Length: 471
Image 1 (cartoon, rainbow, N blue to C red):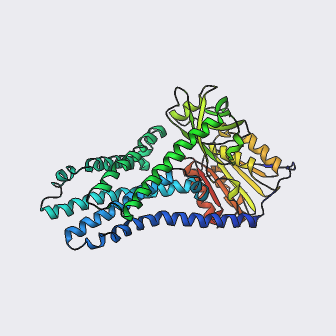
Image 2 (cartoon, rainbow, N blue to C red):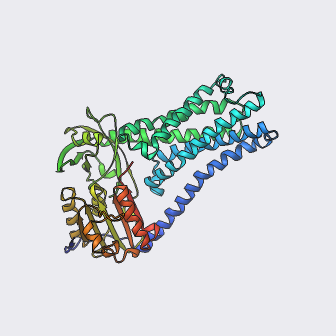
């Protein structure tokens, strides 16, 4: 374990007072809570509109009650799917307010409920219609498929099941990121296939009703957000900034820093710690894009990322030819200096997680003595960009600790065997951890262990900032 203390005087910068940071944080949290409540409230609105426009009177018989419950399940399930699309659209307001990680966490949490509700929708309608027709619910499938727009709805539900299965963690890990992403695009098709039957079957969304207007507007907003922020905006931004690969420099086995040149890059207003989604137009990379953090703050003409070979997709990126045109989406993420609320700063980073941390430290407003950084690696070969981080820390008066070695075998530990035996804890590095913002970046399993220990030491939830290298 080595200790490096910054001795140089940093350049004078304007520092944001802790009180102003806390005020800004409370403002963001209010917006975040209001946004999450409104997203969940849309499900209640879907059910309320159905009941208000005649649905409340459709519970008179067991068959009608079952069918009506099926309709409500379908409406709420569809609402959840549209909310998931909105959360995945990378709308700047949502990204700035709740952050990409939290938005995607909510997106994932809605997946299973949405699927179960839509499956329940189908089963309950088959039972309800079967009771009316006095036939077996399974036999009701044939007549139902004869209804216009219903075959598309069945196909859409089938596609959604495929997407849900591939999203289960155990299944997802069997896919490459590129393959999983392509399968996940089927969710757009599944939602589009479900719309016709929603508007035409059963007269549920009567023409001219507020209920019909609500759903049409919701569909337009969801798909419009996808079209605008996932396609149109990145297209025009990429054309404007004209990024091309300028150099590919190996910094360790399987790890390269890619410098790209372009125009007016400061106008992107990216902050240290943020990431972009990159698409390299080369023979082996044109069909897949990847979220990769900046590893330094962009100049007006250059931007740099650092990539580790973790699979076929990232391997092809590490070998991209000089001169390759690059398209991008972003910047995204709230793993930035703007999220700080406490007087001190603590940073713990492992492996290739060093990339956003390196840019974060370059961009952060840090007074001498207020920041402590712990760099973690399993081997000396995995000390990527450590020399740059240590130099940044020295120039800003920050303290750096390093920890190299495999994880302890006893218990669920994030540190080395030697440090674990000596009784080293997170508090050993950060004695003022409850008075610090703690920034964590690295592999999910490792990061969860550090985060758990930090919570055990009493750090406040809003002082925890995490960036998990997972998908």
